[in-house]
Image (tube, one colour):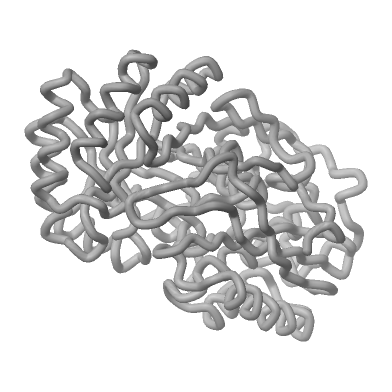
Length: 417
């Protein structure tokens, strides 16, 4: 199923995609000279899906390996380098779109070799099945890559196709997703490190203008408190997001909040305090956190499908859901966003240690929709190298997406092995 009509009701129908002809196809790539789009114009993705016929000429995935500045340690895993998959789709009109499928142990269901094989399989099918509207093609991809298995691959291919189509009509993605804004402000993540290292990072990020720090916790309760105290010393005005990545049980999670309360610290968010399948524990922590300490709790690993969000809403298990495209795909994310907004849940958008290809797409979505209370799209800042060219402008925590084509930039494809 595609995104529901309610999501797109924010967009005036008269301002949607100009061509009303069914199966219309752009005959020339707008990449060379994108058409000027009036500031007030908002092109709707739903309308585009119904009207734009996709003809894929080339499609390919390649390994995207990038070192990190330092090992990225969370409660459930440790990452030494990014080993993702970059996806390039070229339409018959010459327009190119880019996507990225991240690989994160214990979160995504596939490793890099499996993801590359599945990308190759789907790309072959794309090249053999021209002449379908975007609205028909994307659900077919969903059928080939259903559910949580290969959701990261599904997301990367959806990104590349939508990006290529946006390039064809000369419209930046933030406008396609609603046009609310072209600017977002992200937090910055401090992984599980010593208190000394955490203080050094917090001091550096304070100098760069970051006001919200997302702190990875959940491996050692005593060490977590020491790190919090050290950060508070060097960045006393920062806002805290705690992310346990399933590392605590419910009693430990509540104990952390009690310790912070004694320190005079109230996190703005407590993300995934307990195991993804511990629904009872999640609901208990959420209730205590909100009623006793005024802290919101977010479901991340527990939010891997629309059914998960329905359960969270029905049983009042969390206050926020963290949307990650690699968990649910682009269309799946839009469905979840729609349900969450209708149900009164707050929204967070995050990533899985991706480059600017995926984070640029997610950032455009967040900026265009304008409905996210928490934005956690910092992972490109954590990379030792940046293989992505052009894309958005970065100034500390602020990302600005231009009116130019594309989302997070592009790669020199021949340099990707």
